[in-house]
Length: 446
Image (cartoon, rainbow, N blue to C red; front, side, top):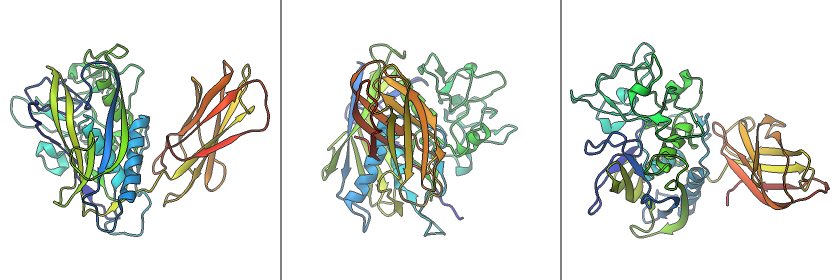
């Protein structure tokens, strides 16, 4: 199959009276420390929820594509960031639209998920186009040039660019890696600068540089079909719609707040709220539009300082090329349901939570695979799916409720490869009776 790789960019803009900073992982601007963190709009240094509104500017649309078609895909990308579940196996090639064999479409949802990441402060893990390097060298790990004013690029003995044995001379690393580990998919319970670092002195013995979330690097580390959403460089006819541990850990470093310590009062959570279609500028915190200028995809934002090493976004716009041959995914291509035994759930005994995940549509073959989570009240269990028929997979896990009363029962399929995540949620009454099973269906999140 012929493939066309495209570049996805972030543009940094000055807003009135603001200071220009780097992206979330660290600042590219030498006026800020290499550990500088970019926070989403609305974070001022105080803890709590940071809510960013998202809207779709419908004044310019691709020919023959309705606003409703685009909107459905926008809402999917918003749900992905709100879910904030870190997964591997997020890469699918092809994603299903196989009618065009020479230059198939670009997945709009994957591109948009990447750009939303920029608009909440995340940078490229790789050097990318902003480095000015030829495309063959852009997968090296993100860095500033050192005193010699040029990037030093040597892929080491494994010949993989962006891996742990790269030799980078005096390049100053900007990529946050797990201390003493250097696995881009590492996801410990504590994620802040006490467990992650940009200093090469915190690398494991034998490592010379931080390894990033490139697909070839991750495959060599034992994570097939996986690439960070924020890694620049997307092929046509591939889906990359779910965030990885590398994406989520970088976000979590920022969520530890300006004291850079997880679990303190200045920590924040991030939520995105899609508010609908608009036809004017600056109508929401993250405004999504199409441009007629041939610029493939970028997030432009302004920023201001919180303190000397922390900044926040003040305004953000995602712009994607109107004339690119986009694939717009209409909705989740899986549907999850969950049943309990006994039903309704009962205290004092192990309750079996059985999930079914159905393949709904699209070019994916086989049945949904991967992992799921079930939550009843404040208790959670997890499991792995196995095929039950040609379109459906199933799995089960157990929860022992500790209290009676009305509680929320939810199940989440985390997705895998080209199979989308899906969720169902329903109120149940936990008691001691055990009548016939009850089943709930949904492919959407509220």
